[in-house]
Image 1 (cartoon, rainbow, N blue to C red):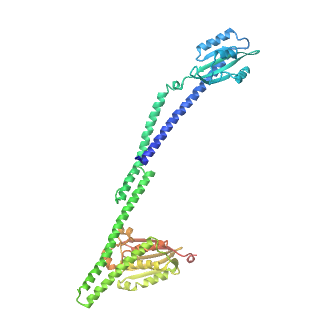
Image 2: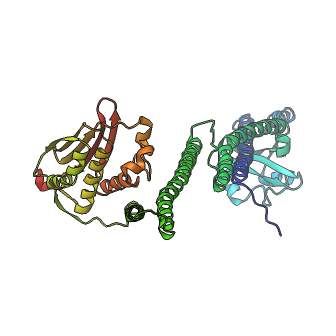
Length: 469
């Protein structure tokens, strides 16, 4: 047996239509009940009013022919059946029918009549095949009850009551239902079309196609969801592009040293050298490229551990000024070789709570980049200052970074100067590692670059509390 599956749109549509239909039916039956109740109420009031008026023709004294004649005349001109009798027994002979399977008057009714009170009776009369509303009014003389006025009216069948209004109700209900149907269908279309589009787009995304976008007509909750889906697709597309670029960069970075190693190894194997010095240079190149491969693999593993929170930060108090001095000492020879000058402004007695090895890595990498990308005979400015409860590290060089490259700084293997990548060395992973280390220390790093100021790197980190109390 095949189970028919309905979409969410169809289920909601059927639910709303069912609710509307149930509401219309309920309203119809409620109006039917209300109309019936009002109809019966008006009949009861009319019977009581007419009965009281009829009984009012009698004044204390005898029930003479003149009064009886007036009552009979009223019976002729009235829409109600009106009868005047002398006693309860005579009334039973005149109206020998049960009302609602009960006699017209029971003992309690007779007591009320003897007390001069009227009695209202209604119910189904089998002989008439319909309901009636009736009332009995006592006529009191000097010595007690001398007569009864009996008035009753058969009720019309409800289909007869509603015969005139039924077409109007059906027409109004039909028009109301059609209008609601059109409105609901319109709302359903506007609500679920973006969802259907999202379903189609998700299937395309599952196939690896991230280029399509949704175009919601309205920016309601569904429209916002569609926009979020667009952002997700755009992000996936960007990540896919970066993944392909990353793989391409990894292949490129690994292929180059492997090509060197393979080529020079083959040359040594086949004795393709003219002197021992040339063979030694081949071995030096192989050693250098092997170290480069090791560094790439090490940096990739390091960066992966940092990004996946697999690396445990061993925090301890660090005299950050001394750490920066020690790092700058490592660059004295390179600064001299590149004819670079430094202006250093370092505030001492600042303590941060961090990983000594990783913070050394941060300072080394940032200074190394400043040295590598500074033009000769220029100045590198290095500042380490305190601002309230934070440490500010700033390093400035005269190298220029293109504005379109700034957002990509810190991506794996991304270099601003690809032409100099081999001459300047490095793996293109250093800044990515720096960003992750600073993030793990709850710090921030900002990079700016323009023609006038050159390139500036700002690192902000919190100081230990006892250093600023």
